[in-house]
Image 1 (tube, rainbow, N blue to C red):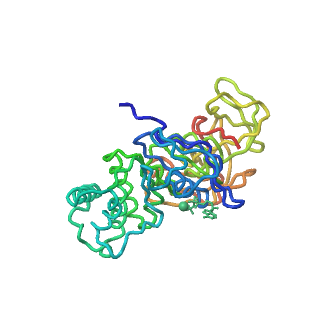
Image 2: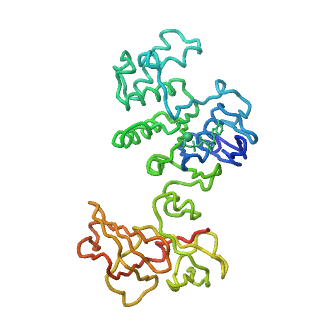
Image 3: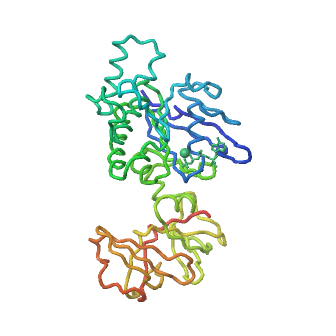
Amino acid sequence: MENRSDFVSLRDVSKYFGSVRAVDGVSLDIAQGEFFALLGPSGCGKTTLLRILGGFEASNSGSVHIDGANLTDEPANLRPVNMVFQNYAIFPHLNVRQNIGYGLRQEGLSAAEMSQRIDEALATVKLEGYGDRGSTELSGGQRQRVALARALVKHPKVLLLDEPLSALDKNLRELMRVELRALQQKVGITFIFVTHDQEEALSMADRIAVMSDGKVRQVDTPEHLYEAPATREVAAFIGSMNFLDGSVEGAANGMVTVNAGPLGKLQVKPSGDGAPAAGEAVTIGIRPEKLTLLDKAPASGDNVIKGRLTAASYLGERNHFFVSVEGVDAPISVASQNSSPVDHKGWIEGSEVWLTWKPEGARLLLS
Ligand SMILES: Nc1ncnc2c1ncn2[C@@H]1O[C@H](COP(=O)(O)OP(=O)(O)OP(=O)(O)O)[C@@H](O)[C@H]1O
Ligand SMILES: [Mg+2]
């Protein structure tokens, strides 16, 4: 059976709190079985959008469909959806089994059926044998798993997760990323996961919606968001990127020439749908790892800029440099693997350096 690509569908959803546009005209289609992330800075409307999906918040306009049914006006308890909240609260006076079984009480199951469902949920989150533990006798990661089991035990069609890993320390968070992804693949439930941590979104999600100011700015796979961000804003949010401003001089042979003022003429491949018109203001975006640092000017070649090394740091598996370039506001960030020829030793801060990159290593961005 083909999984439907609009299993969860939001159409032009808006939500205002007084004059604050928490969610502003959002439309999204999420596929059945997809691990989908909503990524954006604090206050951009992620939780509000998730609460609208769960039926905990009514939108001012727009519609919500799940599995073909219009649920816009359906209350939370009648939606085939469960939510793991940002500050997941498990009940301290109940043990693990009671916590997991809590939401099943209304389902009219027999004691045996209920017990079986709880066992199954415990196994899914790898907490077999922990059923009788008091919930205060658990580690942070185990408590997180109880919260997940409590949502999964209801067999939702869609699971909404609001920053479920944010309360965990860094090591556990990284471990839980892998576990959560594996669990999602095993149960096959559509996951909609909210985070402001780009690494978390990149490492777990099939697709990511990047949000800011209540709007969805780009929806794409992690690879595409990193390699082909559509705008400067998205590029700056996903990983780090250097920006060089200029205007289009012309296009020929699949290459755009950008006049970058004091940096001269730079060559860049057009992004997607054709080249921009001559005279148009554009930004060239270059990831730190796409730049090569040189201690003398190359004999020839396009895309060479001169600068001054302001900082060189050794970071174990890689080296990191900052280069100040006349006419560019922010220092240019350069990263190189320690196994590459550009090692960290011998670079003297304050010395003249040259930066170069391949035209396909840069992105032409809309401002
Ligand atoms: N109940 C409310 N009343 C008034 N304003 C609200 C309410 N809930 C959210 N807001 C506002 O709506 C905007 C979006 O909030 P939301 O909680 O959705 O952000 P978020 O992306 O989840 O942020 P965070 O990453 O900090 O959790 C914010 O400006 C917030 O202050
Ligand atoms: Mg939030």
